[in-house]
Image (cartoon, rainbow, N blue to C red; front, side, top):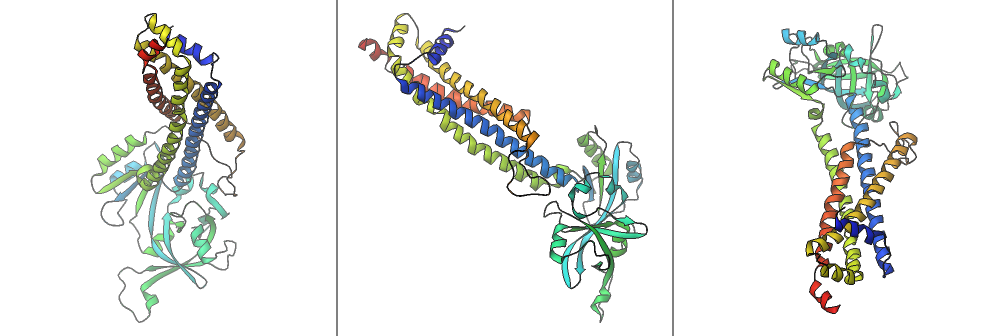
Length: 408
């Protein structure tokens, strides 16, 4: 065993003349323990929120979305799209036609988005989890239904169980000329709501309808706004995106889920790093208490330092003793902190003891998602700060070494 490490270990667990040294060392270790545990727990909670939010978005955000670069719509009836539709790796191939429209219920108007979808849209088994009222039904026999966002329902006061009061949807008539009656410039269609979904504000102003209804309303018998693709498990989405983009040409954009919600991903990432930086500053304060602890230890061990120096120990060896002692204090605190943090996260995952404070439709307790990279990040952060703090303390241990010798 390295001599410096051996002596550092003896100093760590041996008694000191000044009892305050033990207290300060214990406080330093406790600070590292709490800081490490808190950092792991907070990062895991943010991972949990990110997982929940992205799973909600994935209900309406496909793995790959194809749109025209120029114009709002494009013709999907091409040989390539036909061959892509038959790809064995596809789970769903949804044609989407959407446009802004005026939605009216009773005397109340609301400017929202009509989103017509083909039948493959309903292959998503998670759609029902977004429903706050009613059901996710778009067709029943020959009758079309709309599933509306919570914002539409709240603004118009729609009762999805009132089949006698349908919504009226107004869309500008294509090629309409000025008319004495303004209503002649609009296509008006009625449809009953079957359910209300709640995800995020970005989606909650959408009314989802069968694509046939949207084609009739928008007078768009062929074109679509986008093609939404989801794939079977095990499919390499990045490789599929690149392959589709290469074959489809520059007239289209092919976006993966992250690119479709770039602002959301950036926001989640910024929030996570902001919390990480705040907790890192807390760790810095806790770990730098070690400098005070080791400085007092140097004072306590002045005689030992002089004896070691007289026996031939060089300055590097003496520095090493106090450097490794500082590293041991932080290592013990960090390992115990990570262990306790992991136990807490596993218990929260299983039992959900810590509640959100308000009943939510999606979750009522804080979500947890443990990731290996967070363990590495905590160890790297604590280790980096500890090296700096222990290095400063070690340099202080050899200052005034000659004066110590003379005193003795």
